[in-house]
Image (tube, rainbow, N blue to C red; front, side, top):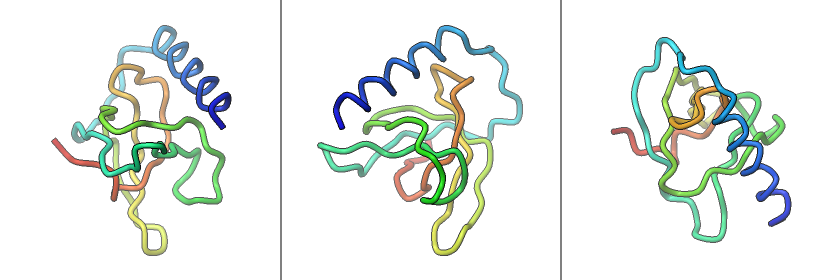
Amino acid sequence: MRKVMATALGLALTAMVLSSPAMAAWRDLAEVSGVDADDMLKMRAGPGTGFLVIVGLPNGTLVRVHNCQRTGATRWCDVALDQAPGLRGFVSDAYLTHK
């Protein structure tokens, strides 16, 4: 599990370096919070747990929220990493503290 997270972090850092600076229509800034200390919030390829996990985000990670939608009982937000806007996916709004 730790190797997977290390690989994902490496991919995230690569995306940060290679990402384009412009991501239009960001609604707000949010911080990942409420995730267990030994876990990470899963950023997924789509709005639901059935989608591929792109990367794990620890508490304190800043994301830019593009928009949110309800899928079942969960509100999923389309987000991009604040420091790597090219890395974009969906996270549960329950773990975001909006700034």
